[in-house]
Length: 181
Image 1 (cartoon, rainbow, N blue to C red):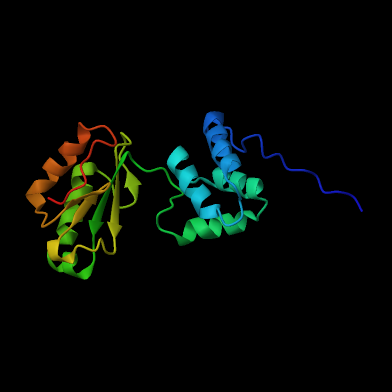
Image 2: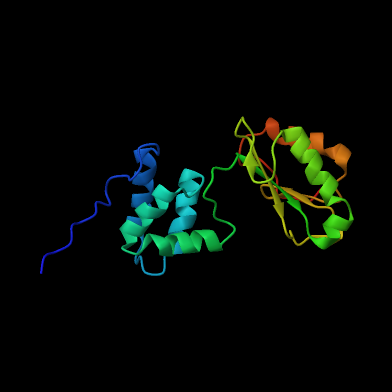
């Protein structure tokens, strides 16, 4: 019986993704005590490194872990945290849950779409924002709620949208405070 051909896991499977990022992912995977049961942890790290999980990165991880690509894709597509598309530097999530919706979340998201020039799940041309409509943020008492990255805005009014957007235009990633407004 002949041995199957080896698949290289040292060379990136993609021409358009930087080799340095694959090297960083490799270093992370190699430092793990065990790879068994570490798929989600590895996917988190990969998304942190690449910003998203394109097909090539998923296949690379599958090869490194010696598991089917479909298994990796299944996990990526199941958990809403993971994304297969690039995201903006800042993610604006507008809660569309019942409490928020009854208090005008539909008008809030429409205003964001108008101001940013994008639809839900799209990225602005400058790569600064991604707009998402989410089912629930868990702050119903503050409805309608908008979350930008990890900063929560409660009882949002349409006239506050410019101020919210502009407060992130001048900030660099990681400078935002974690508090409710």
